Length: 181
Image (cartoon, rainbow, N blue to C red; front, side):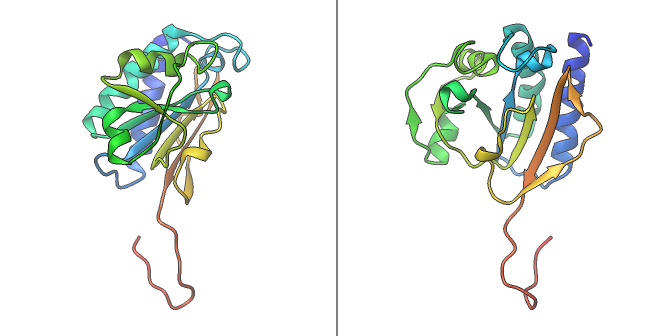
């Protein structure tokens, strides 16, 4: 599995995810990733800034095209805080936390996001609309209820297991209620 394949697969998977839902501008895409798992190593054991940069190279053009906010989840050493742009934090009125991710606490993707985002901040909680989990990093805590799994043609990014999700509004009311799609 080469780096070009990793980039191509992530691009394809993200586009498949976006086609499953009515994406609106300024929605939040949560991404959790173990670059160790992508490289074929146990989670947290072989963090790679090279792979992290490659993954952001695949994500950012599409996120920008669709005018989404990207939220990069840190690892459990930072309680899965998220790197986001300041304008996302302000729009959604999220509380900023004071920490700087690095390879050994936060992970490579969060570390790279801190250097490549225009005005990065960290928040402890978010309610994302879409999610990509590369390497079983457990992003579910950062998605809005109700989460709907998305099955893609891509099952792995590199050697890492891939899961994706979208969210929908809750159905309420009961037998006589009528619903939008």
